[in-house]
Length: 623
Image 1 (cartoon, rainbow, N blue to C red):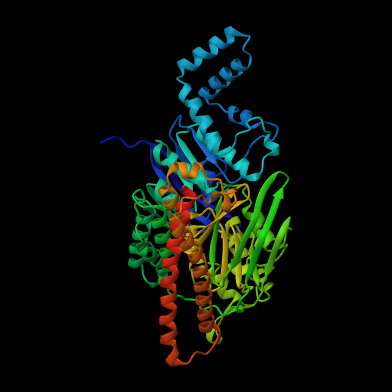
Image 2: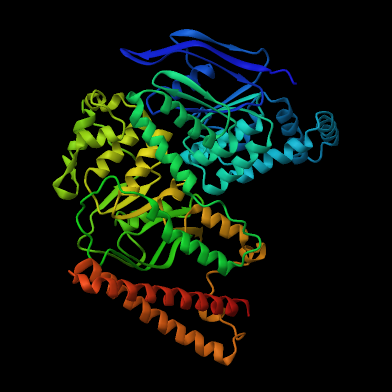
């Protein structure tokens, strides 16, 4: 059995700010090849602990004992990049010997006249075996979309700076890598690449992250700080959930709230269908399997909080041929969509494809270049933006929420007060009378969510609501949103969150192309993975439909295709008419059964015709 190498030991550390004790007498160790996730509520001092381990802060008591000669790299929420340097200069401005050798070699390549300098640089590359290292560091920059290596740090966006700091940490290959929310500012493609990188690399990690799929796939140990005590779980996120539930079950009723929260989470995980094998399935089979899943998924949820929001009329939100560009960059190119009552749609896509701009157009905060946004008269938007809350000096937590509303009405004359909403989102009565400026970044985001929700909107728009929220708060938010009866439109790179609360996706492909997908994120990944690679490569959605319909259909199939379009429209209208009767009219008891049976027949016929229509449509595209 291999000897365990201890890299770092935390011995009885404590930290307080004024009268507020963040944590005390915490002890744990980090050993070689461990991939540890540190889990705790916002405001528990997670970032302070990371700063202390990284040597940027000192504990009030206790000590950090490090193994001699180990290298530590820390990716914090705030970078320490030099704005006067370029991306390339920032990478090479480290003490890494191999990077220094690569830098000399690249300079020698630029100055091709000096053969002697080139020979020396080449021999150094050979001696340090730096060729693979060079390939890998260029791949890291490419995956993190840092392609212009001569761009100055001073011109980078906040997200680009975070990605550059991450790249520098990865390129330097430290013995111990400390990460504070590494997936913030990464798009889904980057997150999945980073997941894959960490799971394959022999690297020692200590991280704080709210991304539960990342926890599941990367970490082999979870360290939880709960009620001032540390708990260790040697396993991934699923193992942690299961064992945390067992631990909470053993503790008395004073932890019953936390117990039920995690029990719900665990039950949800067990209920979900196992990931499908997709290689043998056709695209059409996938499409309809996903559609069925999307319609079934949320029916399992038992509503706990029956919100009595202002009822939405028949017209919710209509987007007609929307056009939008910023200079040469196209965001929308004739986008059409009519929202139905109660739809829950997630938005995914790479950074820079216009997801936040799209939300700002819908809420009419920025104008469209062409087309029309039509908002129904009964729609009341609740818009959670990435900017967060504007803190007023001397304002208390409860006062912020009460500015927007005193309560949320529930059914049967009940209501949830501002104080009760805050308690639900883990602000206890004492915390509600704290000054807002004392809150951590994550607590301020949680407060902002409460300020949006207390307004009781019937169309909720959330732009990256999971950033800076801890796992416990995410569970609370997810359960609130599962109870929420209105329309939901959410941008998030948190795949676990999206899987749990949305039924469909808008996939922003870039260059103004947006695809409507009938399922959640895991469904989408399975569907994408099942598509032949050349199908993805050949995707040219800008070609008008009429040009793609080639003459591979027989005469009878063409007639059938035309008839199907008319039949589908007729059946959709019939379905809508009966659904509206159920919603708007008091139907006599003896007619309910008859109408229900009629509706089921229409739905079955509609799905059969849609399936045949898609089959013929695919045949035309392939012709």
